[in-house]
Image 1: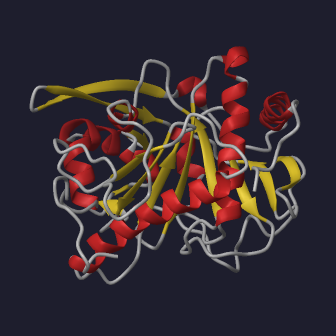
Image 2 (image 1 turned 45 degrees about the vertical axis):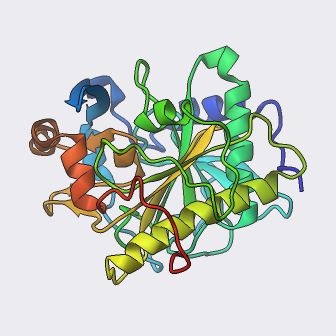
Length: 319
């Protein structure tokens, strides 16, 4: 099944809606006062970048939502970029009311679905359809985008209603997964081929390179790839006797990655979601900013994740 399509005006509609919502005070963003810093750490002779952002407007963002206090349950036309999307119009695209970067938006299920459930085939197709539309507009804005999904109670998710988020990658910053993806051809989901892991970083993560073009068989390719990565995540969680299923999903048009999570926060102070595995840390005060800068990306992700399984093969006892 081919991916659902967006109108050619989607990116300009997104930009216009964001500009209007910001001017009218319908979203809270204080980006002019943000402090951004790219930090490079040497790990066994290889440089790894992380990007730290100190953004005071994050203090207004709710830490945890509930089903009863569901911000996605009521229509918000002032934040809605597309009120219907998908083969069955089952999704909507809305701006994040507390954006981390300009144009930060979300793919939201119209009906309530739990953020603790894995992405379904239609949700994967919708996610990559949006990424493709953003990629096609790159000639206009020169921005690189990624999608992320925080799944499970220890994933860093802030809302229980299922939503995939989309953000731009900072200029001059390359996630380690992008560099890793260039070392391999596209992943073929089977029992013999292992997803990529960077053995130097020390925490478990699973990266699959996608085909250059996704055609009519895109749903099958995306679903089989996602399930293959999820199987590795579930194996890590089971072998660690973990009492919950939590992981982060990150993707670009070129790859997808899953990281199993042991904890939703670092030292009880810093909430860490999918942006963390990308090396992007969003700090609402100076104390958290200093913690991230002092302790570093690798230590934080190792603490909230699980030990790397790079080099370990699968057997009949694995999912």
